[in-house]
Image (cartoon, rainbow, N blue to C red; front, top):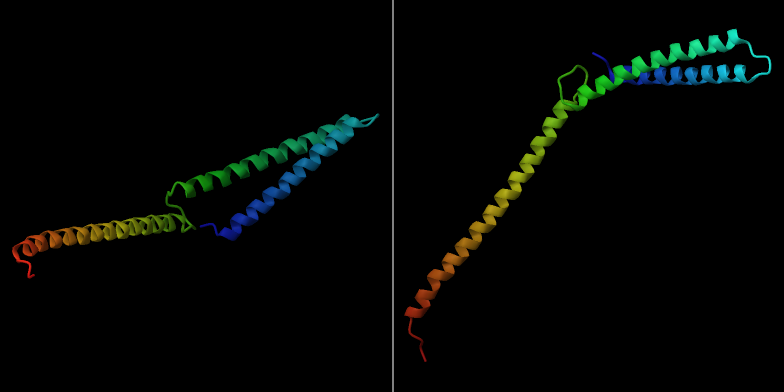
Length: 131
C-alpha cells in the first residue's frame, strides 16, 4: 500500500530528475558550442541526459498507470476514490428520486384538485339558487 505522501515524494524525485536531465542537456550543448569542445565531455553529458530521461520516462509511466487505475474505479490499495465515487453517484440518484417524488406529489395534488372541482360543479348545479 502506497501512502499519498509517498506518491508526492516520488513526484518530487521525478521533478529533480527532470531538472538534472535539463542540466545535462544544457551542459552537452554548452560543450558543443565551445570553439575547442571536448567530444568526451559532450558525450558524457549526452549519456547522462539519456540515462536520466529514460528513468524519468519509466517513473512517469508508473504514475500514469496508477492514475489510470484510480480514475477507472478499479480497486487498488491506498485510495478511497472508488468509494467516494460510488457515494457521489448514490447521492445523485437520491436527489433525482427526491425531485421525482416531489413532482409526482404535485401531480397528485393537481389531480385531486381537479377531481374535487369536478365533484363540486354537479353539486352546485343541483342546488337551486335562492333569490
